[in-house]
Image (cartoon, rainbow, N blue to C red):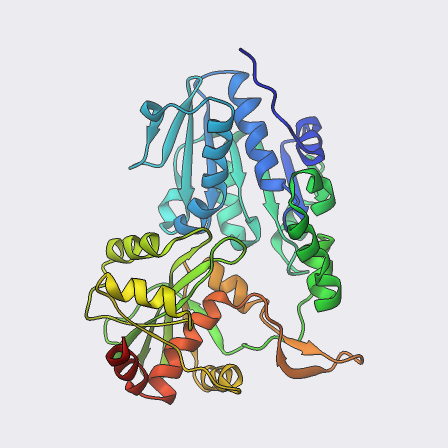
Length: 391
């Protein structure tokens, strides 16, 4: 029995592209990732056998929360999923005699692996030029890239788009609007009144330059130090529209160190507890969370040492001020946190001058850091001891 599959305009544009490289630049919710995966699964994988499809992103947690999730959604909706073909340990799937492999570049040797037939780089602007060179050299048939244009200087613009064997596809949420709920469309279009650059980048999918950034005192690092004098976990709750973020925060050598552990939508409190157990978080570890009493109570009942953050009229600005006093080291695998730090900015007045009011966007993992540091660096440990006693 044949099954009808609905596709967007972005799918059709990628389907028609015959060049070696196909670059998808688009705004949020334009459907570019989903459309590329539909093309690979429903079309390319049935053109031949014994092919290798590599789906790549900078970190495995980010890949699992984005392209990998969409991949299996497409398989299941098309009645193509068979658990016997899914190697969850190796992150591979067999389809029509072809191998789909999900790869992160956390380990440099992975990009120097065996040849592949097709390559899909999700959020390609997270990768370095060296990553691109090593991956592209080993791809025989076709390469697909997608990204949000949050910076105007990048190797994609310099090294890829000028090539004669490259097709450029621009998309916005309007290309995917038939698949979006009205509240999501309203949220995207609200960016017009929030910030001009946000609207340009995430609404229109055009190159923009984020100005008025709140944090510039951070850098990426390879590893977490073993000598932290204290470690606290910060948590910001979300569910359908916003992600739940859990960040490990420590202090070493007079500098703040942070590592993104969870950044995912749709997590219930039992889901969060399950994730934390898998991450090795114990009953003795301190967690400072968003001030949501029900969530905190339920997680505390599961045996975790969790307490609400300090809330006050100036708590956000106080927390920002504390974070700006120290150098901040962010692990390279903290992809979502890095994206937030590159976008979290001050509101601007009519003349474009930054105001002392942060825009309430791109701040879920950032807020989690703020909660932890408010506890440790401003209130000491008093806040968590008092809150735990009250629970």
